[in-house]
Image (cartoon, rainbow, N blue to C red):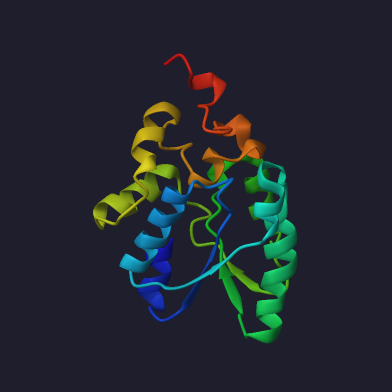
Length: 178
C-alpha cells in the first residue's frame, strides 16, 4: 500500500507503528524500515514504552496507545487529516463486517481503505508487476501458511495464533511436523 500512497503524494509523512522487539523481531523491523526508506518514504516511527515494559503481555497496546492516543493527538496538534488503512475484506469475517458497516478505526481522522476489495492475489500481482520490494520472511512463511495468510503482523503475535502466529520463536503447532 505504501507504493500506492507515495505514487499519489510522494512527500506525505508516513507513520510506522513499531510493535516492539517482543512482537516483531528486530531484523524484520529493520527490513520493514529499509524497504520504506528505499521507496522514498518520509518515515516517522512511533512506538510505546509499554512494549518493553510488558514484553509478550503487551495486549492491545496498539489500540490504546496508537488508535486512541497518538492518532487523535496527531489530528489535533499536527494537522494529520487522513490515514490509509491496509485491511482487506478477504482477510476475515470481522474485517468484511467492519468494511460493510464502514466502521472507522479512528473517527478523529479521515480514513482511506484502498485495498479493501483486493484479494491476496491482487496484492501479489501488484507487487510482482512493479518489482516492488517486500519482506523476505513472506517467502519462507508463505511456503507453510500460503501467501493468502502470511501477514507480518500476525506472524509473531499470540493474539493471532489461530492465523498461524509463531509464539516465542517456536513455529505454530499446526506446522511443526511439516
